[in-house]
Structure formats: structure tokens, C-alpha cells
Length: 250
Ligand SMILES: Nc1ncnc2c1ncn2[C@@H]1O[C@H](COP(=O)(O)OP(=O)(O)OP(=O)(O)O)[C@@H](O)[C@H]1O
Ligand SMILES: [Mg+2]
Image (cartoon, rainbow, N blue to C red; front, side, top):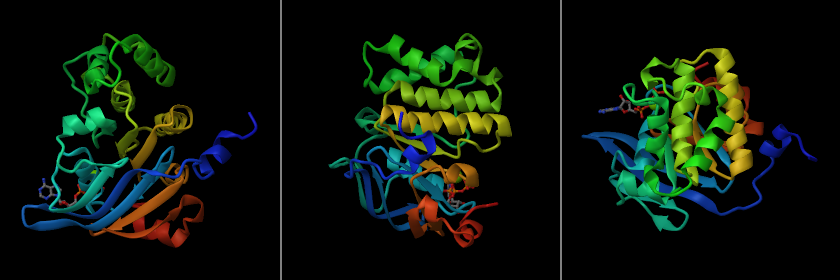
């Protein structure tokens, strides 16, 4: 290997068509105008980080991309296909994986059953064993806990399970909402490393909401949100202390 992991990740992606293209997006909760004219792109093979303080609309954006919230106006395209009028199930089938804030694994199902739920995208038909093996390779701890109930796992293990579940459906684009939130530091590093590995080895593009600066810096590019509007964006290597202080809850 000629490049180390970090330099490979910081390089610009070689393919430059957007896998996700959002333009002029406006989203409301009732009469509250939450997202305001949001434009955002994620290119193939890229890891993009969305930063912003509490309550600015980061989760609202991810929920709108996967289809749990509907937009009042604007466009969301996956590759060249407009997806705003598609159901969340249909978007998952088209290749969007979603790991929600708070993980949302099913506590009364076993680890294995939780993982199998990820197959419902239908994108990995007949490849259950292969997908399981990939999940174990990425998160070895899950293999030893296959028969445990999801609810009995630690927070970090549940997060790993939630990411693995999304990968079982082989997305093209993975949405991750604060995957390191409330997780002990040693596991944070493990989760960071596994997400880097996903980007590097599978070609899956990632849109990440994150507060840990260390992790934000591992993304190729960032978008900073304030009051539902994108107010800054660029390469993470050019993230200034000023921007960090303004937009990260550090
Ligand atoms: N179900 C809801 N009904 C009404 N307003 C909501 C609802 N969920 C969120 N909001 C409001 O929408 C705004 C954006 O919320 P959102 O959860 O998207 O923020 P966030 O950037 O993800 O915050 P955090 O960093 O705390 O996760 C906030 O002002 C919030 O109070
Ligand atoms: Mg949120």
C-alpha cells in the first residue's frame, strides 16, 4: 500500500458525480420553518460531515433525506433520481442507509435478529451469510453476542449494531446521526475507525452528523448549519478554530 489510511481519506475522491444532491430544501414542523433553502452534495466515495450546535436542524435534514419527514419545497436526488416523493422503504431499497440518533435498535430482539432486519432493503438477497461475515469483520464484538438481546448491549455495542444493521442492506449512501454521542471514549475510537474503514474499503459514501472534532476532521468535507441554513462549507483540512468554536458544541 502506498498511502496510509489518513492521507487516503483526506484525498479528494476520484469520482466526482454527486451521489446525493440537495437543493433549495425547505422543511417545516407544523408552522415552524426548520430547514431553509438547504443545498448540499455528497460525492461518490466521500465522507461529509454536517456540524452545528444543538437544535439547528441536523437531524431534521437526515430524516428528510431518508423520508421520515417531508419537504415543503426543494429537491433531493439520489444519483440522478428525484426521491422526495418516495417512501422511506423505497429510499432504503434505492440505497440509502440510516443510523438514527439514539441508535433505535430493537431491545427485545437478539443481535442476530436486529442484524437481519437490515436485509429488508432487498439489496442483498441470497447474500445473508456474506453480509453477516462482513458485519463481524467490521465489528467483531457482535459475533460473540449474536444471541443476546439488543437491549442488554452497552451503548457502544448498540451503536456498532445499528451501523452493522444498516450495512446489511448494502447502501450506496450511509446517513449517520451522531454515532459517537454518549459513548465512552475507547469505543468512540473504535467506531471512528470502523466508519473510516467502511468508506475506504466498500466505496459507500457517508453523510455524518458529528460533534467530536477529532472525527469531524477525518471527513473530506464539512457543512456547517445555523438555524436551519448552511452557513459555511469546505474541506475539513481548512476548518479554522473560528468555525469550530462557532459550530461545534465543544
Ligand atoms: N417533532 C418535532 N416537532 C416540532 N419541532 C421539532 C420536532 N423535532 C425537532 N423540532 C425542532 O426542530 C429544530 C431542529 O431540530 P433537530 O432535531 O433537527 O436539531 P439537531 O441539530 O439535530 O439538534 P441536536 O444536536 O440536539 O440533535 C429544533 O428547534 C427542534 O426543537
Ligand atoms: Mg440531532
